[in-house]
Image 1 (tube, rainbow, N blue to C red):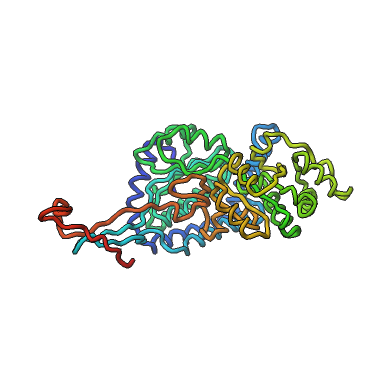
Image 2 (image 1 turned 120 degrees about the horizontal axis):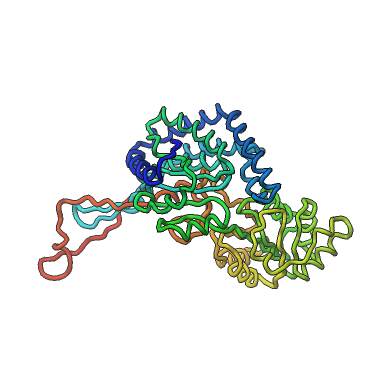
Length: 450
């Protein structure tokens, strides 16, 4: 990885050139580079966390005067319990995954001595633009190297110290490997985003990681394909047949385990028949964790009645229409009463962001209907929306979560960073000899074993 203050054009050209070398490296060389990165980061934990602490100090001051959101501050903290360990584990998990390059997914005999194969290959050059999230550097570097892609990273100013510290360590590790240092670059030039987004001849895919405003700006400002999501407006539908105690555990986890995450639940849809049965346990669990419930009239009345003076009634407030279209990223949850699974599905498809939804029910048919009809990248049954994560899916780590409907969807790991090419091996056949009519012969199009 190189820290570069070169022009965006020069950085993109270098990454493009390096991508051809990286794509040709054997899996063993790419895996060895990841092993070196892991060891180097582990050995430099103290200095990296010290740099992160300096970023955090400035970020907290910015949050105090209102110039930075608390959600960004939360995402910036690399010292949060388990975060450093997860980052390092993700590198080894990626290393140990099967090689995603060179896999044959189709083999066809077009004719005698004429075969076609569809083979996975790297995308080329990735541009990752992100705010806070210093662990993104290690995540992206690991996934890019394993999948044979070059990557250009442009981070936000709020985490500059962390980015530089991590990048210097990774760069030193790559110098000892066969991976060209130019394959992974951290751009330090200020105001470089617009110019980077114009490099459509060298950059093949943009992956934004950050606020809704950042993602929307990128989507509107480039010809390069963009993979990502602008909102993480996740919903859970709670039915009367759900196990109340287990549902409370899952919903509380979905809201409180990391409220600033894009897979945190933002809307709870409650079946009217559940207001007096499964809903009270969920209310108790959420209020005990300090969650503010913004409720419609039926759910507010049920929530207040369920507390019986044992909880903080000030946490139960009236919802506004905008609450059902808001990614709160805090201990705030919009609650709405619905009559049926069809109404829940209709609400999600109208107000959701296509990220992740879950249904809590004992009815298998109802669950399958919900999962089939919600228009989202993740559809769960009796599970927390927080499961929407590359590491939890077994992808090692992820470059982000995509709500796109092309190429890759949901948590994007190695497979989402490869495309494919068609290889044909022949014996100088001319296409003019195939077809219908005198002197022509048909293609055989016989499926062959992989």
